[in-house]
Length: 183
Image 1 (cartoon, rainbow, N blue to C red):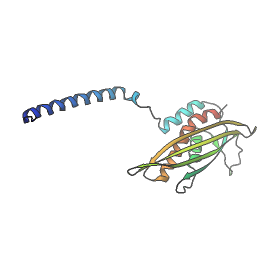
Image 2 (cartoon, one colour):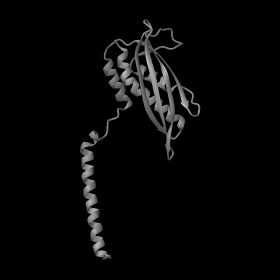
Image 3 (spheres, helix red, strand yellow):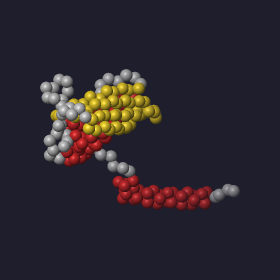
Image 4 (tube, rainbow, N blue to C red):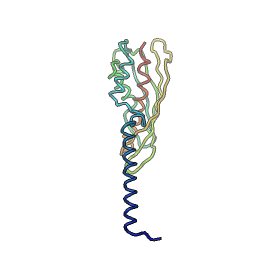
């Protein structure tokens, strides 16, 4: 079956118009209801503000943090999970003690973390991580809380993706953990 060029032009014009109208309807729905279509991801600042609000005016304990870390792949130095959790504690007003401080901690956060290569798509590399922690009262030596978190990080370098995955997991973990540290 052969169509005349006028008929083809009419059909293409109709299809073009139909696509345009459909695209406009979709754009209107996304503009109107976009915030309900995808879960809102808190920024770092919003997450810290939320933690501070949960802490209120309560007395904050002195805390120590020791999280061992391993990447399954090329060796990566420096503890991203421990560093991120320590930064968040400090930004929320906690005093953080380590082996070099004279002040004895009221609480000890200890745990293990690992990251591993996930996949590569083009130049982007993903890594997955998991952090497992325990919070122990130094006076009672009782385990007060146990928690864990997994997360993903993406970057053009495997090592940075692994560190980002650990930072992301520590951020999510801190949101639940820090309010529990106060009485």
